[in-house]
Image (tube, rainbow, N blue to C red; front, side, top):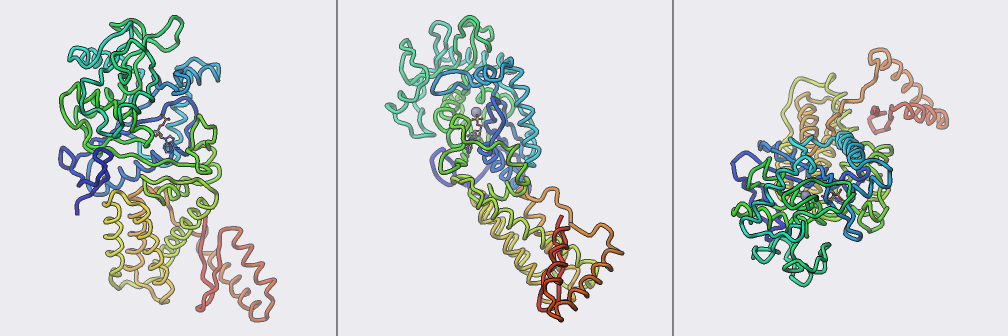
Length: 479
Ligand code: AMP
Ligand code: ZN
């Protein structure tokens, strides 16, 4: 079955066919590095990371570009550049602020186990490319100059609105540039004139100024991926105007349609039902979240929702993710422990192949991670019943369960650093543990539960978990 994706462009499911078979050229809008990254960013970049990893798992080569926005992204309410605003807040030079938060962002992405893009271009380092591009748009009659500003003439691009379905009246409402000298209120800025003393500006054929935010991504995507690309992604807040404008600029400039074959948009991460964002001040930084939860827990939480759905951050969902992760790990640890004593015989249990197929089917259906996770849980349960069903296990079966659970988890970026938890000094410690367990059994027979429970509790504190089954105590190790 081919992969099918929900394309925002056209709002329908389509079979996924990259321009060049086997290669996926992908661009995702990067962060505006004005402050520390928060869980909203983590949601979007983890969702795309799982998509990329899965595509790679299915044999595609993914060439991935994610930019750094360090100029030109203006705040809607005030029209102020977010970087200049941040620099003012922290009393730093704008590029000092950018360095600070760009490297912090790289660190966060690494800590979350997000695969590094092939290129992470910075907008401020591509001003010359943007100037050339804007010159081209003017020459082709798609842009015009008004007193040091350059505007895109929306009336020259009849396809405008094809991504978002926006209506003309609505478009006018959303424009940040209320310049009455524009030919049409819907036209948007490609280049903006900078006043004297403005901190982020460059020379251009139209005087000193700075680029518009939309031209940045368009120019960097074309520069590094070509005039037509396979996937363009971002959060759903970027559909209008950012991505709509990217399409207008790119297709007007190159004359080639579509600029991107598939437009993928992530739903919001919310907190108390509201979008997590810097401007609302309701954000939890990735850095702080990682102090409380490990990266795998955050990833499991985020992937438990489909990438297009909204997902609400709350303690309960995070605890659920912790619990689910613990179950998977416990099972892997037990499978690993049992291999040494298992017999050299047996076949791969049929449900492993079934689960792998169902997992792939779910992911191939518009990257349905909740459906894919359900298959991992199913496989884990089936491994557990195999562990419990007999006392003599087959090495083949144990290894097949272990391998499959790990393979599927890692194909969406989970358990990348998993190592089986074992006792540190197995030979002697195993003997000591057995003595303790025998004593505990004896205490239980004599109904001295207070003592037997205290042995169990103390062992649990050091990561040795005793579970009483009808075949006697079973031991699990946790880190
Ligand atoms: P920004 O730093 O605001 O330029 O955003 C960078 C990327 O993160 C964009 O693709 C946004 O759509 C995405 N993003 C920001 N906040 C959230 C959120 N609360 N939920 C999901 N994605 C978000
Ligand atoms: Zn962008």
